[in-house]
Amino acid sequence: MEENKYFGEDIREISKMDFIPWEQLAGSSILITGATGLIGSMLVGALVYVSEIKHLNTSMFCLVRDKEKAKEKFRSLSIPIENICFIEGCVEQLPQIDHKIDFIIHGACRTASREFVSKPVEVIETSIYGTKNLLDYAKKKGVKRFLYLSSMEIYGYPQKGCRVTEEEVGAFDPLKVRNCYPISKQMCEALCCAFSSEYGVSTSILRLTQTFGPGVCLKDKRIFAYFAECVKDRKDIVLKTMGDTERSYLYIADAVTAILTVLLKGEAGWAYNAANEKTFCSIYEMAELVARENHIQVKIELDRSASNGFANTLFMDLDTSLLQSLGWTMIGGGYDLKEMYRRMIG
Image 1 (cartoon, rainbow, N blue to C red):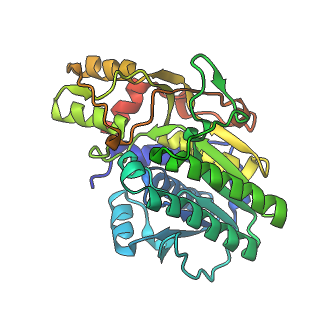
Image 2 (cartoon, rainbow, N blue to C red):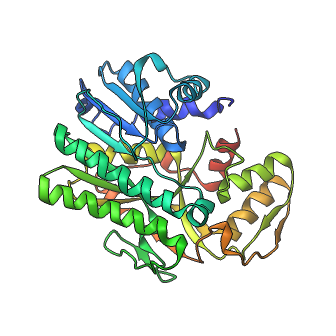
Image 3 (spheres, helix red, strand yellow):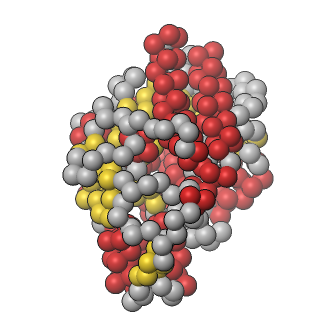
């Protein structure tokens, strides 16, 4: 993997966000799952960098399935691995962790849409078993805060034109296999609430919209990666739907600052939306924007098959007022989609 030239720049920008109470991390230890993922790797990089320049002496623990692959990835991103303790294992069968842990950021889950229909059992197991195991650990060790990274998909299918606040959780048909993902996410949020109510574990939830930026693998099957791949390969964008779905997006660095804001300033037991409201558009509109800027075309070749794992048409206009009330703002005031793509492609 080649380092995207904006990855390091974004980490430095994250370190300048003074609405994050960095001092709360001084001398603390943080356990991160999903650390090698798109958001997790930038989160780890930012925490390592900030700990060094602000002399916080923060201890980093990353739960990874393959220690050597994780080290290789972080080296490729110029993240100093000597400042990270790698714990090899998986959330489904949590290994013994003897270290003192103050904060847990749980981001490990299966996000490939095709797996929602091809491996629904595994999707559910990773979500439910993983979250339950980590909450048990948080209870046992008395962690200060457990932050669960959830998804906008828990809202179901809001009506077109409605702003989606944190109170408007949707309902799902459990007999439709693709719903294994949002239903398991809802169950994990319920587990967080239950552990908070019954055992006093301090939990918070961040509901992320689709997030992209530096570090995205262009072979990723998600729509933003596919568009970027088309730009790189100078080929036309082919949509398998009419592209009617409307939603907001979020730059990775802003997702990292949202995570740290809720971890350190969020109310226990609350959930917060994270999105760049200014990027709200349809998939077709985004395709047209990318194509126009890069002199390629958009074509539609409808695929009615459910095997692709795509959600039905949805209108997900997330309201982020609650997160903003904690002082959260976006880097540069929030990049538009054109800039987000430029930085993702590098």
